[in-house]
Amino acid sequence: MDFNKQVQMAEEELNLVYNSEKPVVLIGSATCGQSAGSEEVAAAIQEECIKNDIECKLVKVGCIGLCYAEPIITIIKANNPPVFYGNVTPKLAKELAHAYIAGEDPLPDYALGTIGQGKIENIPDLWTLPVLKPQVRRILRNCGLIDPRNINHYLAKGGYSGLNEALKMEPEDVIEKVKESGLRGRGGAGFPTGMKWQLCRDEESDTKYLICNADEGDPGAFMNRSLLESDPHSILEGIVIAAHAIGVEEGYIYCRAEYPLALKTLKHAISQMKDAGFLGENILGSGFNFDLKIKEGAGAFVCGEETALIASIEGKRGTPRTRPPFPTTAGLWGKPTVINNVETMASVTLVMQKGPSEFSKVGSEDSKGTKTFSMVGNVYHTGLIEVPLGTTLREVIFTIGGGVADGKKFKAVQVGGPSGGCIPKDFVDTRIDYSSLNVAGAIMGSGGMVVMDEDSCMVDVAHYFLKFTQNESCGKCVPCRLGTKQMLDILTDITEGRGRKDDIDLLKKLSEAIKSSSLCGLGQGSPNPVLTTLRYFMSEYEAHIKDKVCPANHCKELISYFIIPEKCTGCRLCLKSCPAEAITGEKKQPHIINQEKCIKCGTCLDLCRGKFDSIIRVSPPIE
Image (tube, rainbow, N blue to C red):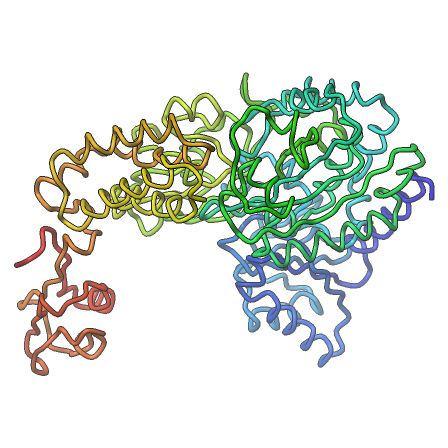
């Protein structure tokens, strides 16, 4: 079918959703929505509508990014702008079915906001909310607004127009457009995408390969998963554009098996592409052939590294190899190979749909475009965000994120995952771009961002991330295999009160040795959380080592729980709930915690806090 005809039919279909005479309800059904109860909400709406003969159509959409507000539903009625509702329960869903789906009361007290033309009294425009107003949503433009399992929804939003344009151009001209955009790889190091493509295209070979890396393994990171679940065709379109530009006829998407919904959505999207003529032989009548396969990974963090990923696809153990030669020269099965991550591919789509100048309108001098981040930790508005590169950490944490939760003070933010670094409050005005983050001791990484408050122990944070990378080390090279183990043992000693005065110098020496001699990026980046916490939070290390004190009252071996007799009412709630039976005392008499039996789980403190506040956590430990 003619491409323009396909688009016309798709626009007509999407128009039936947003301009239907019957009410339409969009249900956020990505992993975050489902885990928060969106399936139960959808069932409640459907049940209530059937029971009361209310006309309504339900459409499952992806994640709009407001994970803190899930489950999210959107009600669309004729002549009214779509209204978004957050933290929807089955009970509220039934109320909305009667009040707004069947009636005229939008229940504004429960609404997040509206989008599009027109206003509803007492409901704000969604994009004016502090969490959304500073964002520039390009990569996430369709997320939460279309059905990711319906290719026509994507087509109606300009989908595959970039591919249609690219296939009319010479491959070299496509590469030039990508170079002109200033796009850098969104998977970690930020290597210029157009340059990588050029290096591979210039290689003389009868066969070349293209791999999309969807092996998102950073703790707390979910950018790739959300995009795969919410707008898979934006990634797939970029993959086919890249294949045409490089001269590739076979490609792979490497996605971890722990992403079942993303894989299901991706497989369905690929099937739709083939049926529509966007994948396979003679794509859009251009004479270009390209086939795409999915390789499911087993969850090894090291397989996010290019050469380890290649080994895994080849059926070998996922371990890295020395470079050079780089994959663009000798990659999959020894052939020239380009590896780009999910967000890079979606950015390629944007470049070809909107043009390189439009893409580079936002961003900083050396970091063009926008970047998605998953914001988690001690912040009010956790979720998926997208901001222009060059935006400050302050704006992201305090404006978009709503500040630190529970009225606590901001202490630090970990950017870049296990290979990134902890940036302290004094550097909160650091710009989020490749060079600025490097100066601060962190990296962009794939986009994980963990916000920490005053109760976070930075020594324990370093211990946590190093434990992760040590567990994920493939063990192939000695510096990573043994060096990270020795560093972890030292950090364990420090957090458990066995630290020695020369431990800090030893940590620094080991860090430098591991960074300079490890085989791959996992080992080379593993000391970064330790080095940045030593750089910015040396006083906490010294307190742990010299005074055997955890300033944040976090490290179990360096704290004790103590009952203040004057405040204890003898309610026995803590006594009954203590898993170690370490609390004794008569009813209505002050209780006592046996320090030898106490396992320092904090259950007693959580139960008493806000009621009597008779239990305190102190450091150093009480003998």
